[in-house]
Image (cartoon, rainbow over all chains, first blue to last red; front, side, top):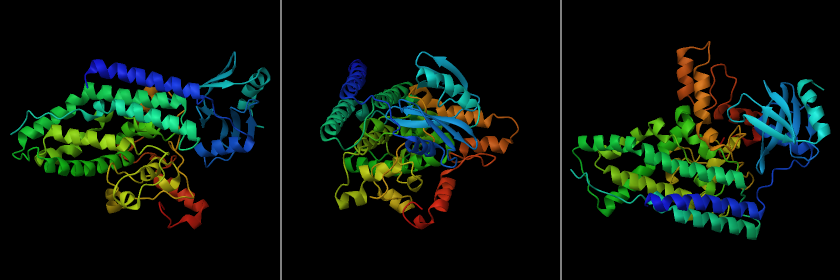
Length: 130
Length: 308
């Protein structure tokens, strides 16, 4: 197919599908129903490291996890979730919660939406065991 | 020796069909409330990966094609372009696909290119287009050498490869359950390929087929989709980013970091490149064999069932 046809087709196709999906309502982030759901989400990534403690965010979109090996977070990846340990993480406050910078090419930056109380508490929870 | 043969670039001509089929699947799921899942950023990432794959083909395709034309100049054989030669070429190229795909899951250097296709936690028609940008660097074009040397023209071989990829598009869906038994027995289907995309211990390293599932049955890698165990899509360790650059290159970065770390032997450095994904010099990570072994330790009753 000639490039002058292929290029606009691809660009408009991607844009059109993105707009359609968003309008249908398929842009909502994953929700963790309860502590058990957060635990399951963690175990999907780290099946050998069962959580000792789970702190679910008030909006149910993220969870702070503590295991024998340390602290980690579960957070939404679109309609699904993923999780990482917070080893060598740099944590900073943002207007909407916390920003976590990790030395991890596959998850370099995590933005957690937290209320003011959580944003104040979580950094210390991430550093100290329960 | 015929060297001025041209075949259509079927993949780019299929782009309107890809877009139309995705729209139909989206509307089907939206109306029926079943048959799969979509998420905006995941789908956009997949589509950008697809566009990037076409772009990388335009930019780097000359390397593989140049290599094939050198082989074509060397071989004394020329099978021509009759329909039966194209049909045989299609079948043999599918066998080639099976092995390249198997290498893609068992050799980390090749996995570094293929991993992005498995990096979505969704399984829909956009996942089919989440294709590599770095296939040229795997050197897997070498696996096509026998076909060229046997007398199949490079343009025909690439044409068959394009048809193979187009066939595989429609099997990336949850909207289709199972096809008729005779079809499931011979052809790769949505059911067989869902297994391939599963991160469940049972489904790891299974169903490498492109078009004909018979290769998996022949080489012992076939695992059926079980009613009682729905595939859980994605990677063993899922990505924490939708950034297409990171999706495309993350495993190459991982290889670089692992192979250049201080305090390991040159053999370890090489092994980080060529051993199966999950291999590590100190055993601190899990390969698919180890994941299956650990799973069976917790579920001994599953031993001997498909995939174990």
